[in-house]
Image 1 (cartoon, rainbow, N blue to C red):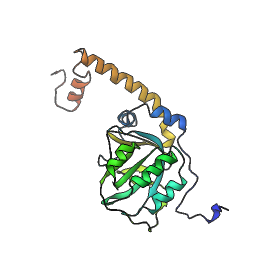
Image 2: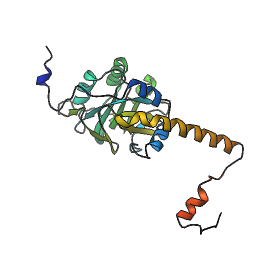
Image 3: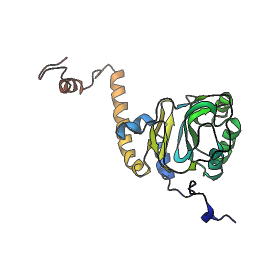
Image 4: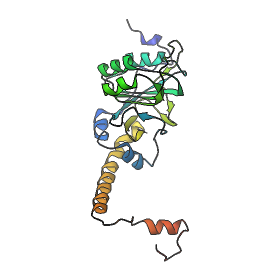
Length: 233
Protein backbone atom coordinates (compact mmCIF):
# COMPACT_ATOMS: atom_id res chain seq x y z
CA UNK A 1 0.00 0.00 0.00
CA UNK A 2 1.25 3.47 -0.90
CA UNK A 3 0.88 5.53 2.28
CA UNK A 4 1.24 9.18 1.31
CA UNK A 5 1.33 10.15 4.97
CA UNK A 6 4.83 8.70 5.09
CA UNK A 7 5.99 10.76 2.10
CA UNK A 8 9.09 12.88 2.44
CA UNK A 9 8.29 16.57 2.98
CA UNK A 10 10.76 17.25 0.16
CA UNK A 11 8.51 15.47 -2.34
CA UNK A 12 5.19 16.97 -3.32
CA UNK A 13 3.02 14.58 -5.30
CA UNK A 14 -0.08 16.65 -5.90
CA UNK A 15 0.34 19.87 -7.87
CA UNK A 16 -2.04 22.10 -9.79
CA UNK A 17 -1.01 22.23 -13.44
CA UNK A 18 -1.72 24.73 -16.17
CA UNK A 19 -4.59 23.19 -18.13
CA UNK A 20 -3.99 21.03 -21.24
CA UNK A 21 -6.16 23.45 -23.24
CA UNK A 22 -3.98 26.42 -22.30
CA UNK A 23 -0.85 24.41 -23.12
CA UNK A 24 -2.24 23.50 -26.55
CA UNK A 25 -3.13 27.11 -27.34
CA UNK A 26 0.17 28.46 -26.02
CA UNK A 27 2.16 25.97 -28.10
CA UNK A 28 1.05 27.84 -31.22
CA UNK A 29 3.18 30.82 -30.21
CA UNK A 30 6.92 31.37 -30.08
CA UNK A 31 8.35 31.90 -26.59
CA UNK A 32 9.38 35.35 -27.83
CA UNK A 33 5.74 36.36 -28.31
CA UNK A 34 4.71 35.18 -24.85
CA UNK A 35 7.73 36.84 -23.25
CA UNK A 36 6.81 40.16 -24.87
CA UNK A 37 3.19 40.11 -23.71
CA UNK A 38 4.31 38.94 -20.26
CA UNK A 39 6.21 42.19 -19.82
CA UNK A 40 9.53 40.90 -21.20
CA UNK A 41 10.06 38.65 -18.22
CA UNK A 42 10.16 34.93 -17.54
CA UNK A 43 12.86 34.03 -20.06
CA UNK A 44 15.64 31.75 -18.90
CA UNK A 45 19.28 32.72 -19.37
CA UNK A 46 20.52 32.03 -22.88
CA UNK A 47 22.90 29.39 -21.57
CA UNK A 48 19.93 27.01 -21.58
CA UNK A 49 19.46 26.02 -25.19
CA UNK A 50 17.82 23.28 -27.24
CA UNK A 51 20.16 20.47 -28.27
CA UNK A 52 18.79 20.93 -31.81
CA UNK A 53 17.15 24.08 -33.22
CA UNK A 54 14.09 22.10 -34.33
CA UNK A 55 13.23 21.06 -30.77
CA UNK A 56 10.16 22.62 -29.19
CA UNK A 57 8.34 22.01 -25.94
CA UNK A 58 5.22 23.18 -24.15
CA UNK A 59 3.75 21.89 -20.93
CA UNK A 60 3.34 22.25 -17.19
CA UNK A 61 6.50 22.42 -15.10
CA UNK A 62 7.35 19.43 -12.93
CA UNK A 63 10.17 20.89 -10.89
CA UNK A 64 13.23 19.09 -9.57
CA UNK A 65 16.08 20.38 -7.43
CA UNK A 66 19.28 18.35 -7.29
CA UNK A 67 22.71 18.78 -5.82
CA UNK A 68 25.33 19.49 -8.50
CA UNK A 69 26.37 16.30 -10.25
CA UNK A 70 23.68 14.02 -8.77
CA UNK A 71 20.56 12.81 -10.59
CA UNK A 72 18.83 10.66 -7.96
CA UNK A 73 15.84 12.99 -7.74
CA UNK A 74 15.46 13.13 -11.52
CA UNK A 75 14.87 9.38 -11.53
CA UNK A 76 12.30 9.88 -8.76
CA UNK A 77 10.59 12.66 -10.71
CA UNK A 78 10.38 10.49 -13.81
CA UNK A 79 8.58 7.84 -11.74
CA UNK A 80 6.04 10.45 -10.57
CA UNK A 81 5.47 12.78 -13.54
CA UNK A 82 2.42 12.58 -15.78
CA UNK A 83 2.36 12.52 -19.60
CA UNK A 84 2.86 16.03 -20.94
CA UNK A 85 4.81 17.27 -17.93
CA UNK A 86 8.07 19.10 -18.59
CA UNK A 87 10.80 18.25 -16.11
CA UNK A 88 12.42 21.54 -15.09
CA UNK A 89 15.63 20.71 -13.28
CA UNK A 90 17.63 23.04 -11.08
CA UNK A 91 21.11 21.56 -11.52
CA UNK A 92 22.86 24.73 -10.31
CA UNK A 93 24.33 25.33 -13.76
CA UNK A 94 26.90 22.57 -13.19
CA UNK A 95 28.76 21.36 -16.27
CA UNK A 96 31.26 19.00 -14.64
CA UNK A 97 29.11 15.99 -15.51
CA UNK A 98 25.88 15.10 -17.27
CA UNK A 99 22.65 14.72 -15.31
CA UNK A 100 20.88 12.74 -18.02
CA UNK A 101 21.58 10.88 -21.25
CA UNK A 102 20.14 8.45 -23.77
CA UNK A 103 18.78 5.86 -21.33
CA UNK A 104 16.81 8.35 -19.25
CA UNK A 105 15.59 10.38 -22.22
CA UNK A 106 14.37 7.26 -24.01
CA UNK A 107 12.37 6.51 -20.87
CA UNK A 108 11.02 10.07 -20.77
CA UNK A 109 9.80 9.70 -24.34
CA UNK A 110 8.05 6.39 -23.62
CA UNK A 111 6.44 7.84 -20.48
CA UNK A 112 5.11 10.64 -22.67
CA UNK A 113 6.73 13.59 -20.95
CA UNK A 114 6.71 16.94 -22.72
CA UNK A 115 10.43 17.62 -22.49
CA UNK A 116 13.42 18.31 -20.27
CA UNK A 117 14.84 21.68 -19.23
CA UNK A 118 18.12 21.11 -17.39
CA UNK A 119 20.18 23.87 -15.79
CA UNK A 120 23.20 21.57 -16.08
CA UNK A 121 24.86 19.37 -18.69
CA UNK A 122 23.59 16.30 -20.52
CA UNK A 123 25.33 13.64 -22.59
CA UNK A 124 24.75 11.31 -25.57
CA UNK A 125 23.78 14.44 -27.47
CA UNK A 126 23.84 12.92 -30.96
CA UNK A 127 21.56 10.11 -29.83
CA UNK A 128 19.24 12.59 -28.15
CA UNK A 129 19.05 14.73 -31.28
CA UNK A 130 18.23 11.66 -33.36
CA UNK A 131 15.60 10.63 -30.82
CA UNK A 132 13.90 14.00 -31.29
CA UNK A 133 12.70 14.34 -27.70
CA UNK A 134 13.02 18.01 -26.66
CA UNK A 135 16.01 18.52 -24.36
CA UNK A 136 17.22 21.97 -23.31
CA UNK A 137 20.46 22.24 -21.32
CA UNK A 138 23.50 24.40 -20.63
CA UNK A 139 25.76 22.07 -22.61
CA UNK A 140 27.19 18.58 -22.65
CA UNK A 141 29.72 16.53 -20.73
CA UNK A 142 30.53 12.82 -21.17
CA UNK A 143 31.02 12.25 -17.44
CA UNK A 144 28.20 10.53 -15.58
CA UNK A 145 26.49 11.66 -12.35
CA UNK A 146 26.19 10.14 -8.90
CA UNK A 147 22.84 8.85 -7.62
CA UNK A 148 22.74 9.15 -3.85
CA UNK A 149 22.20 12.76 -2.75
CA UNK A 150 18.67 13.88 -1.76
CA UNK A 151 16.91 16.83 -3.34
CA UNK A 152 13.37 18.15 -3.77
CA UNK A 153 10.49 17.57 -6.16
CA UNK A 154 7.71 20.05 -6.96
CA UNK A 155 9.05 22.87 -4.87
CA UNK A 156 9.82 26.31 -6.34
CA UNK A 157 13.17 26.31 -8.14
CA UNK A 158 15.44 28.77 -9.89
CA UNK A 159 16.38 27.60 -13.37
CA UNK A 160 18.26 29.80 -15.79
CA UNK A 161 17.77 32.73 -13.44
CA UNK A 162 13.96 32.39 -13.48
CA UNK A 163 11.67 31.36 -10.64
CA UNK A 164 9.65 28.31 -11.65
CA UNK A 165 6.75 26.95 -9.64
CA UNK A 166 5.24 23.51 -10.14
CA UNK A 167 2.49 23.65 -12.74
CA UNK A 168 3.71 26.84 -14.44
CA UNK A 169 3.58 27.00 -18.24
CA UNK A 170 6.94 26.24 -19.87
CA UNK A 171 7.50 26.98 -23.56
CA UNK A 172 10.73 26.42 -25.49
CA UNK A 173 12.11 26.65 -29.02
CA UNK A 174 15.36 27.53 -30.79
CA UNK A 175 15.40 30.95 -29.09
CA UNK A 176 15.26 29.52 -25.58
CA UNK A 177 12.76 28.94 -22.78
CA UNK A 178 10.08 31.15 -21.25
CA UNK A 179 8.12 30.42 -18.07
CA UNK A 180 4.70 31.93 -17.39
CA UNK A 181 2.96 31.67 -14.04
CA UNK A 182 0.15 29.12 -14.11
CA UNK A 183 -2.40 31.64 -12.90
CA UNK A 184 -1.40 34.16 -15.57
CA UNK A 185 -0.95 31.95 -18.62
CA UNK A 186 -4.50 31.90 -20.00
CA UNK A 187 -4.88 35.68 -19.72
CA UNK A 188 -1.88 36.19 -22.02
CA UNK A 189 -3.12 34.10 -24.94
CA UNK A 190 -5.40 36.75 -26.41
CA UNK A 191 -2.63 39.33 -26.11
CA UNK A 192 -0.22 36.92 -27.78
CA UNK A 193 -2.59 36.36 -30.70
CA UNK A 194 -3.02 40.12 -31.16
CA UNK A 195 0.74 40.72 -31.07
CA UNK A 196 1.41 37.95 -33.57
CA UNK A 197 -1.14 39.46 -35.97
CA UNK A 198 0.44 42.90 -35.61
CA UNK A 199 3.96 41.57 -36.17
CA UNK A 200 2.94 39.60 -39.25
CA UNK A 201 1.23 42.69 -40.65
CA UNK A 202 4.34 44.78 -40.10
CA UNK A 203 6.61 42.19 -41.71
CA UNK A 204 4.32 42.08 -44.74
CA UNK A 205 4.57 45.87 -44.99
CA UNK A 206 8.37 45.76 -44.75
CA UNK A 207 8.51 43.21 -47.56
CA UNK A 208 6.47 45.60 -49.69
CA UNK A 209 9.07 48.30 -48.90
CA UNK A 210 6.53 50.14 -46.73
CA UNK A 211 6.88 51.45 -43.18
CA UNK A 212 10.52 50.51 -42.95
CA UNK A 213 10.93 52.94 -40.07
CA UNK A 214 8.85 52.23 -36.94
CA UNK A 215 6.11 54.81 -36.36
CA UNK A 216 7.20 55.21 -32.74
CA UNK A 217 10.88 55.90 -33.47
CA UNK A 218 10.90 59.72 -33.50
CA UNK A 219 8.83 60.06 -30.31
CA UNK A 220 11.05 57.51 -28.54
CA UNK A 221 14.17 59.41 -29.60
CA UNK A 222 12.65 62.65 -28.28
CA UNK A 223 11.76 60.99 -24.97
CA UNK A 224 15.35 59.76 -24.71
CA UNK A 225 16.68 63.26 -25.39
CA UNK A 226 18.30 62.30 -28.68
CA UNK A 227 15.98 64.58 -30.68
CA UNK A 228 14.65 67.95 -29.66
CA UNK A 229 10.92 68.75 -29.56
CA UNK A 230 9.61 69.02 -33.11
CA UNK A 231 12.82 67.57 -34.57
CA UNK A 232 12.77 64.46 -36.76
CA UNK A 233 15.39 62.21 -38.26
